[in-house]
Each structure stands twice: as structure tokens, then as C-alpha cells.
Length: 583
Image (cartoon, one colour):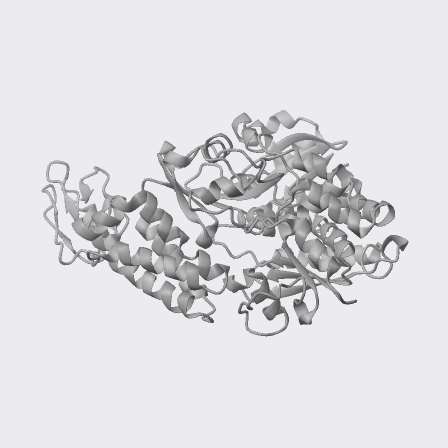
């Protein structure tokens, strides 16, 4: 039998490393038990996860495993008595998280050992590269991608084949292929999981793309904040070279391609392809004017093609199974599947891959299990700082580029942050504006100054100093920035503000006119009082108050001095009788 421990970043953060070590210590030399690692299967909310296989068949999936469970896990496997582990086996409900997905980009994640090329090859790995090199010419590879309808998964949804074709047709002997793994959206971790869990899939997809456009060098631009992804990708490249799958005359063909990693410093603007190229060249990451486009004049002024991790992660599957099979999934405007990082106030947070055309409601409630505490959905943020907030009334919107754009949001790279009624939408807009204002490269005035002015207005509103005309001024600034900004960061930065004004304007009005936060989240707009009828006079609230704003006598109602109160909320947390009121 084989025991497999999930060791993606989420698993390791939850203690999977300790679980692995404990299991290893309990395996005896004469045990016929193999211990392996795998990446993230996507059920981050259940980590650490341990799978038990027998002759390649999954016999049990154990969740929320602790190191103290190691001894009985090994004992149960040794005796083939897996019913002894029923208390930590995955439930039928949680199995539905995976069963309702269609996995292409994530097909090997959490299944194979990302540190072993043989595991990848045993699951059909590098078969697509062999097919491309032995049976197809570059033009037919591009045509297959065209048939598939694969659009760039980095956010813009631009046709992948068109970019490849433009780079191939550009003049010049030297061409470059670049993978954008600079995943910067707050709450997004799709690319990280693919690299950590299935690095050879990325390498294979990139090699096929390099063959198609005629590139002799490929570069993966990955965030330095992803150390595990970098380590596993470096190891995978080393293994591929040793196997003759990377470097000179790959698979005995005339095609040669080298690959390397560039660790980026974490600038959000470097997610924009021309800013990424500037960073690759050792310059400050700032966008270039277009045209010329990278396909004509990119890295080192040579024709270059840039796609993100998820885009490349689909390529090998498409070449193996055919573009028509990929195009059969999804909608008329958006083909295939899309990976989302499902986060926020959701019961089942993690990675979700579904065919385009599913509704937001299905993803949130059927796959994600609904809202924690069975609270009501208020909105879902799509597309990160460049996206928008979609209200509960529009959750039946289908997931495709056109439909999401009509709501004011965007597909983005795949962040999906779910919010309940305790979330202040004005505060949410301020959060994203704070991010984009700080991440602006400063090259153009509209983004550098405009986002700062918007942030100042939003900060004023949430602190109770909003004034008449602020909403109209915000909208005016939004459209001016969208029209005047140089790159996608500035052009999309107003989206969170525009969508929250569009769908939650009443919250802005209450913040400004009534100096109240309906979600009771903006501290400076809250008033804490103690209800005399409910207060038992225990004094616990006074003990917990760091500002000494609560006074009273034991067994008599206590009072809060509003002048001293710093609105930290400790009194409400401490009160066991619900006597503390927040208005």
C-alpha cells in the first residue's frame, strides 16, 4: 500500500510536514508501505490531507490529520483495517467539492508526486510534446490551439493562438517565450498551486508553445514569495534536462529550447506584460507604450510571447485530446474550464476548476457549501483589485468573459472572494484602492495621482467625514483614470469603486449622510453601549477594556464612556450575555 501526504503550501502551513515525519517514523523496515508526497488537491480547508492507495486505487482520503494520528494510520494500513480511520475520513459532503469539478489544468494536482518526473510520465506526461514534435508542425500546433478556443487565463481573455501566431510570424531568428507567474491578486493562489503540484505540466505546455512560435529560450517569471514553487520548478527543470526533454535536440528532434526562472520582487504592476519584460531586463517594472507589442518587440527587443501559468497548464491536454474536445466545454464566448481560488466567508475554501458557463451561485453554494454560519451572501469579488463586486441578486450570472464584464466585474486571473452581510462595501472598495494606489508604478499621472485622490475620499467616508458630492467626485475620477491610465493596472483600478457604487450606493449614502456603517465594520462610525436590562454586572467587559472606558459596580449595570471608547470590540467579545450593543 501507499500513503501519500499532501504537501502544497496550504498543507505545510496546516502541519503536513509534521504529519509526514510522524508517519515516516512509524513505518518499519519490513513494512510493505510506500510513503510519498503530493501537492495541493484544492481542498485547502481540509488540510492536512493523507491519501491511502492500493495498487493505484484510492482506498481512503483522510482529512485534518494531526501528527498524533500517524501511529494508528500506519497500523491500519499495515493490517489493512482502514475502517479504524473512519473518524478522520472525508465525508460525502466534502467529496462533492471535487466531484462537481472538471479538472484539466489541475488534473494532476494532489494526485502525482511533483518531485518525481516518473510520476508525471506514468500519467501521460510529455506525450503531448512528443506528439507535437513527431506528428505536427508549428502551424498545426497553433491551429489546434485556435480550434480549442483557449483564451489567456491571466485576466484579459485574449485568444492564445493569435498571440502565438503573431510571435511566430514576426521576423528574427531569436525569439522568447515567457510565463507570467507573477500572481499578485489578493486571495489568488491558482498559479502557485499548479507550479507546486504539477511543475512538469507547466514545462511541457511551455515547450509546446516554444516549438510553435520558434523560441529557443523560455523564462518563468515567478514571485519570490513562492519559495516552494520555485524549488519544485527548479527540480523539475533539472529532471527534464537529464531526461532529454529540455535543452538541445529535445526527444531527438531538431527543436532545442532552454528554460530558466526569474524571481520577481513582488510588484503587482509586473503582472502587466510589458512591465514584466522591463523587470526581466533588469529595469524598474514599468509598462511600455504599445505598439509595438511584445510579439514584435519584447524581451531584449526580440519577438516574445507571454502567457500565464494556467494558460500553459491547458496546452498539453489540448494537444493530447484535441482542440474540439476542449471547445466542447464552456460557452460560445468562453471555451474550456477555468480555475478559481474560492476564498472569503465560504465554508469550503480552496481551488475550483469548472467548465465556463457555470453560475456563480452553483460555485458558491454547491461546490463551496455556502456561507460560514449559514449567513446571507452579500457579494462576490471577482478579478481582485482590477475586478468588481457582484451582488447577491446577480449570482445567477454565468461565468464567462462577456457575462462577467456586463456586471462591471472581470474574470481576472481567478480570484473569487465571497462576502457576507458583515462586510462593508465601502470598506472593501477602500481596501482594494489602498492596494492599487500603493502598487502603482507612478509612470502616468492618472494612476499615480488619481488612485491617491480616490483613496483619500474613501478614507474620509469610512471615518465619518464624508460630505455631499463625494460619490459624484469618485465616479468622475473613476472614468478619468480608466480613460487616461497607461496600463491595465490604472485602467481597471476604479472597478471595485464603480461596482460598489453601482450596486451598494445606499451604503455610501448612509456613511456620508447618517455617519453610520450598515455592516457595523467601520470602527469610527460605531457606538458601543451596554443594555441595562441585559447586563448582569459581572464586570468582565471592564476588565477586558484596554482604554478603561467601562465603569460600574459588580451586580449592577456597567456603562461605557463614549469619549474614552476606542471601539476595539473587546467588550462585546467578552460579554456572555449579549448586553453590549453596537450601533
